[in-house]
Amino acid sequence: MKLINKPLVSVDWLKSNLNAPSLKLVDASWFMPGTPRDGFEEWKQKRIPSSVYFDYDKRICDHSSSLPHMLPTAAFFAEEVSLLGINNDDDIVVYDSAGIFSAPRVWWMFKVMGHENVAVLDGGLPAWENAGGAIDTSAPSAIAPSTYVATFDASRVIDKHALLDGLTNGSVNAIDVRPHERFLGSVPEPRPGVRSGHMPNAVNLPFASLLEEGKFKAEGVLAELIEDAIDDDKRNVASCGSGVTACIIALASEQALNKPVTVYDGSWTEWGGDHDLPIVQGE
Image (cartoon, rainbow, N blue to C red):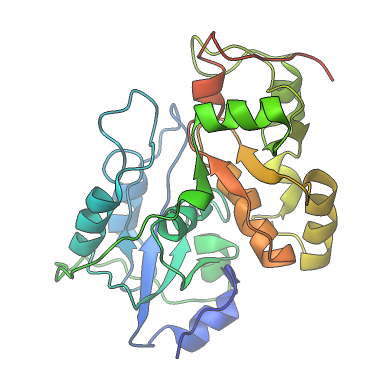
């Protein structure tokens, strides 16, 4: 019997299920470039017991791409996840040390690769610690490898060519989750060489508006916010700076509305950096 039936689990749920044989915990902590923190080093020092570290920025990514942390092939994903000792029938709970920031990215990656029983810990490591959850500060143990098989789900991801076609023919609704100033193009982009602005006809729903004190807002509030941004007659595609925070709205939409949202993996780093692609500035 599967433990997980929603994309989000609470600290209380995790406390109740922490010793379930099928449960695998994944620390997905990652920080923006320039932040003097290292998710892997922090995991080695302090983690929820038995959690493994998932590095989607430097390790489990497409090493042939010039873009940051792009989705790897299904075969490479399966190879790396096998080294983490994760099986296809495991119930996976992903968390990060910010509360809600990078964990939804790894939730989405598992969803793309066909894993159904995966959720994010609402509030992440801070909420776990605040609730008195157990913390492991010993040296990490060696991991016994598994044999994981990935089954790629193309409906959950889109590339720039399909996105441009969809925007042009009106079959796609693009939801940009960057802060409003970046959406308008009124501030420079943090990555060099990337233009400011947004895609034609995109709507803006900053990811921070879905969160409160490191957790997701109540389901009813999420539903209202997301309903205003999505279009039931089109394929809804989320975009952000580099494909991380777009996954926050993808998770929130499934949690609150049971509606899938595709993620544009290259996001604004790719779109804004490609001078052949159209951009708009202002409202």
